[in-house]
Length: 232
Picture (cartoon, rainbow, N blue to C red):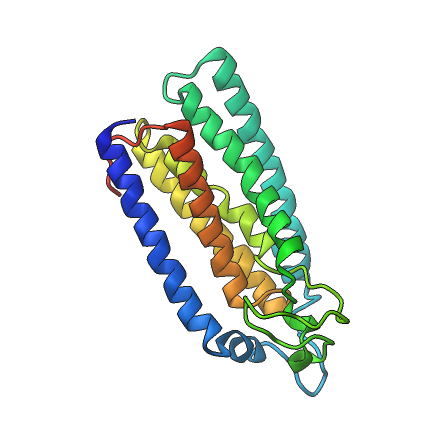
């Protein structure tokens, strides 16, 4: 990894910090999450009408998740092949970055969900649930069942592909851009799907993307994966 690579990673880290500050300022000082989810909640019926809609539940939720598992496993097996057999455009560090990131990002997101104690919209009192809406760093009353909704795990199955962007930047920049867009689009589609169903607030989805990018950059630095001169 060159000095230019390290400088690029530092700029990305600064960008991450700025994004985190914006997210905290916006979502921790307003009730934007609640107000946005109210658009998809039927107060008269007391539910989210799209929660069990076939397109959102079977296709964009379960279907997307199954497809993500299959494609993710295929990518991991290919990385294992590249590590042991060699692939001209995917060096050992690049393959390790892609494989470890594909596994670690969703696992770490799931671990965070069990630690953060934040509830889904359908569990919040504003939407007929049992838990109060509290900010990210506030304490939830102990007698209330723990929330397991932050950050958005379903969205992480899409955002995980941003790690391939970092893995491919130096050798296949065009493919890297496709991986980046696939990760961002996949993560947002999966996240918005759950937003419409009442399973997540918008901040849950955005923080999931932030976390996937942060972990990808950390792995890239630890594995010393070169980034070349591509600045896109």
